Length: 276
Image 1 (tube, rainbow, N blue to C red):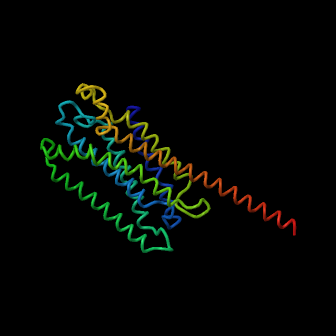
Image 2 (cartoon, one colour):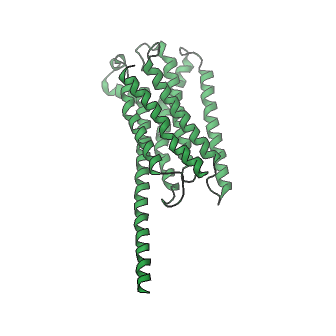
């Protein structure tokens, strides 16, 4: 196996491993307190959009005159890239399932149940729309298929990339104090930050525009095509890495701040007892 393919395989395994501590913490705690349902749902939908994009790339490959990032027939690298996208989707989907299944708050369960029902409906709607687009799209040579593929590349993909960037604000809002029992930890945040960062760095070397596509126009114009064809994988994982990194810094800074407050309170109580 080529070294690049071996690294891709290791990243697939590492992606699975990075989610295990989060699953274990949720199941041990028996609650999803500390995780934003909006953020987890958005991450899952982004992974589904990536899966849809890979579907269109694979199906379009045989008919693209100027080449496509997917070889015909697909190479080992292509199948490993598809496996990476699918594994990321399955892992995020399982995390979403746990967040929906486990209770979030025992204080106000009614709004929590309603938001989870809305999340399930949004996920089902997204899946149904994708299935409909696959069925209605027909063959790659059909005009309607190309319209759907271009809408996915030019509108849907960038839209969910933007939503993923905004969703971390919801995660920051629901993050509880460091001393309170919750589903977050420096290890879960740190692992996700590391893996998403490695994926963002690796994708430009794994999903590459073929040389023929650079001959279609001026380089500035072709650079604008980088994101719709191949850049989405790098950009999405970079956004996820930045979000996890910010959450890790917030978690560590909050823990340090509360530790200082706790130390000050203990010192005051000791001084008070000495005076007595």
